Image 1 (cartoon, rainbow, N blue to C red):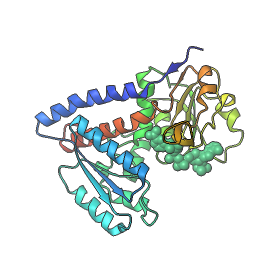
Image 2 (cartoon, rainbow, N blue to C red; image 1 turned 90 degrees about the vertical axis):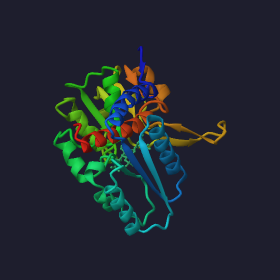
Image 3 (tube, rainbow, N blue to C red; image 1 turned 120 degrees about the vertical axis):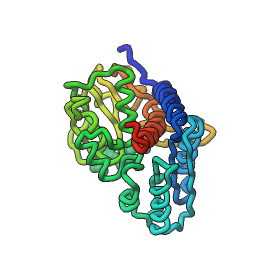
Image 4 (cartoon, rainbow, N blue to C red; image 1 turned 180 degrees about the horizontal axis):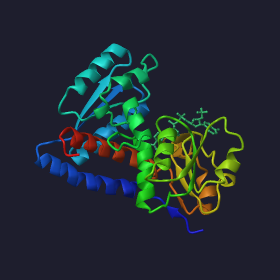
Length: 294
Ligand code: NDP
């Protein structure tokens, strides 16, 4: 099969190019989009994510604030900072990097973010808007990025059977809502760790989304020939041949699955690059809404 390799890097660059001109127009009208990124603790992976979000802002001309707080920061101190950011007119988007240290109640923190600044789309108001198909809300960046990839590559979703493996609030559930929406019109099945006959179920999918966190779980026997496969997984596996001692792989056994598919996202370079691009898009959307452009 002539498999299309869905290029997330290229698509994310296209998204950023489009955003650049919107940001320019906003600035000319006196509005600069602003994002605050808050990190509690010293998790090295989180530090990398936070820095790449700030860098993306700089590249696009989005104003950014990076708040790095010590691990022992209390819930109250974090909430106080969020309250300040909620009232800071320069800030249109607030993101608290996940996962925070265990003593922080993440769900309670999300509730403190002004839903109009919740560019991660985790606040219940935005979850409800997604379910209700109210486009004024914010949708979590990774599933939003997956939808953008499908659009970019002209992949039909209407009437297709989409199977999503994973039911997290950050990927699986929002992805299901996006695909079943009246815009995408797919028929959606959501699988999880208690699903029986997972491979058989997945083999009925026209579009298979893997958001599990298990390297190489999806093998050839999970995939119907001609299916579209989106691999959201980002997993570190040991690899002594690499200078870092590990490499990043997805939830899909790419070498085995790719030849079967009509289209597939590689890892890295597929869904991954879309996440930050969509965060930038959500920040610009928040700015436009706050200054009444939308
Ligand atoms: P979670 O751990 O929150 O959710 C994983 C889901 O997979 C759960 O619903 C779980 O089921 C299900 N699951 C686990 N094991 C199995 C199994 N053997 N068979 C079927 N289902 C299973 O993970 P996330 O949604 O946060 O992330 C998923 C993956 O996506 C990770 O690799 C993560 O790193 C990556 N990711 C990538 C992003 C990107 O930018 N590309 C952004 C966010 C995540 P149950 O609910 O029953 O426990």
